[in-house]
Image (cartoon, rainbow, N blue to C red):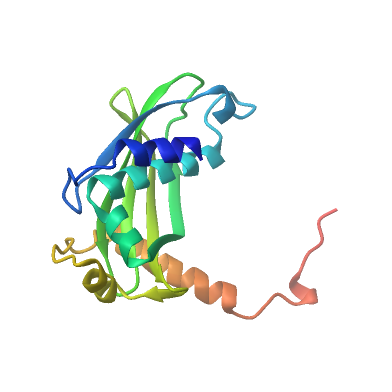
Length: 185
C-alpha cells in the first residue's frame, strides 16, 4: 500500500503522456518478492502490473478524471506469459499501455523488460464501474470528457477476446457427471 501511495504522491501533477502512450516504472526484485526458486514469484507480477497501471493512469490523466467521476477501473481478466525469469536483486522495468477498447472493456498491454530483453508479457481487460454498475465505453468516455479515441484492437487481443468468450461458454456449460469424473488417488 505504501508503494501505491508513493506512486500517486509523485504523480500529483498535470498529465505528461497521451491516452495510449506507454508508461514505465523501474523496479528491482527484492527478498520479499521471490519464491523457492529465488526468482520473482508469479503473484508478485500482478503487484508490479498494478503499480505500472496506476503510473500510466496518472501520467495520462485518467486517474484523477476517474476519481472525480466516481469511476473505478476494475481488472476483469489477465493473460500473462512468463518468458524469462527475473532473479533476486535483478533490475527490471514494467510498462503499461492502453491498446484500445470494445463496447464493454478497455484493453491494455504490460511488458516486463530487463537488460533490453522481454521477460514477461501480459494483456489485461478492465471494466469501468460507476455506482456498482459496469459502464459501456462510450458512456465512460462521455462521463470522463475524453474525445481521444484509441486505435482499433490488435489482432492478438481480438483472438484473446474470442478465447475468453469460449472459456465463459465452457464454464457456464453443462457440469461433469459422476460417470465422466475420475478420482485421482
